[in-house]
Image 1: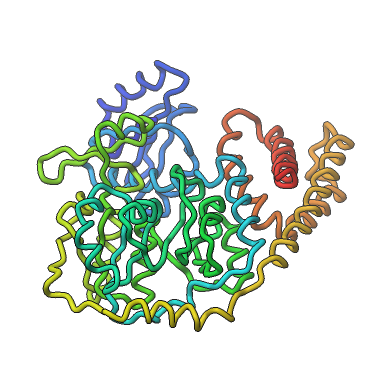
Image 2 (image 1 turned 45 degrees about the vertical axis):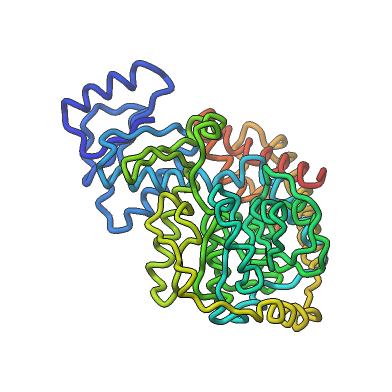
Length: 456
């Protein structure tokens, strides 16, 4: 799919020929005012973006054309650049739904089988304490000497695979942070207390042989995750950005840490690693004239960090070595100018002791959701029976069918799991079936999701 903005007549004629050259080609035309320049065509789509809510319009367009391969003309145009950025964000969020949510649900079930502490018990408990956040990037190796000298003078938080690299250096972080739903790295057993989200890979967190599990909130991209969090008492929003590194920044800030120092959070990869990525994952940046290679989510993370600290001028931040966050406007922290805290170990131990009696039980929350899913499964079967009984009459006109739909819509399992899954599935099916066929495939899709859930 090609996207253009303010297309003139000459370009419109050229693009129409491109659309007609293949049944796979779609043209997305963004205009300040909806004045079609081409004759009506099923694969030429016009959108007016004159509204002030431009980002909201871009997001709706991105969901409508989910998983199309996007190219834009005039790559330096700020309107097209912003649309491309939001399009990438939507595709990253849609990844939660690609397997009908089963990857996340598997993690939810595992986490909710064990007691947990809530991350907000750590908020404000380390005021003014320097924090060093350690990712798994190449700059972590360059910071080994500094980390060894500071491991009992600053709060050290590992981010994802940074935990393994710190262990290899003989450094024990005070806390670990895990957010990846499906980690690509292997982790060895550890006794480090950790912060996690319901979506975090349960096989990774199971390697932590410690009772100190601190559950963080998430932005709520996956509605079931948001619902389960609220049932556990996590009601405040938590914007942790795009990965473990950005999540650690948000968490350290809420814990009261200052300054926040980054290392191993590079957001760049080698040419060899780049070749292993899918073609649409590659991004090349040359902020200083030298080519650097990154990924879409890392580029979004870099932008998130800039915005985060620009809105919190009272927080100091920087990097432990010049190599960290290579595509950001960061700066190395002067270690000589910092006031370190030699009492870190006692503060961490005191915090853990204070929270030791506040663990929350989680099993009832999951059991109640499972009961709702059983009801949804039964209702989907009854709806299919009604469709078969009424065929070829559209079932929506039947009172009994409408009543079953109403009962389904009231179930927690439908509202927070099945219906959001269908909103995603609809974007894939709408191009292949008529409206009547889509109605049938909706119930089949819901039933399939129910069956997959019960088979876990």
